[in-house]
Length: 278
Image 1 (cartoon, rainbow, N blue to C red):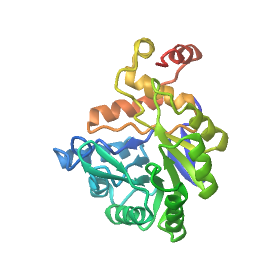
Image 2: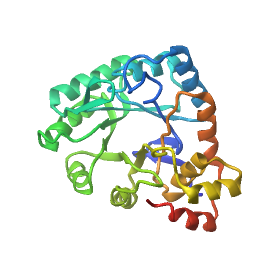
Image 3: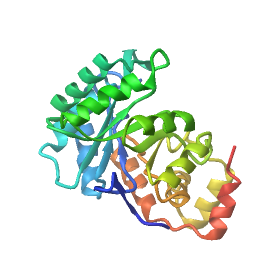
């Protein structure tokens, strides 16, 4: 496999298998978890296993995920990078609404700073372009927050190749977060752009719907691994800029995911897994 670390923005070294903190909140990514202490334990276990890149957003809960991260991990380890996002609003469980208005983004970013007890967010991402206003308005506000020292590096999420190109003309973008998995490669062209430009690519929903298919299951059986582990290992082998962030509320599942980083896939395995494209 290629390098097991990636340097975000040329400065932040992270292990390429991170943790997505969306699922540590309540059902529908809404409200408090059933057991707040259990969520704390998952976060602490992730860090103890060597995870030093945690991705969250103000909309997870909303606000709950960031609160849990702070409760569990503050004061933070020196090498821990916490990335968060703004630009989505919530009206209920499973309901998401884009809002890239400058006033909202400023409020979202400053709220994240308070909840995470940070003076500066290492990586702040626009959660999604707002179709109701130009991308320049949203990124212009994030540029201002960066200039004020509240954001270290900027990223974008849920973008097309054209939107990424526009974003890079407006801001110093260091990463992209789009949906991507072994069975969902809709954003292959965006990944290729990130590889060419040296940008990190953070695949959300990296395990898809949880059924990777017979090709993945066959390789997993041969390697003595689970299909989900092989699906994660494939992402890490797919590109050196790939930063998967599988999320879970279970320590057992977390440990299974982290172990995927140690799986080596042969050329034969990789060729077989290419057939998993749905």
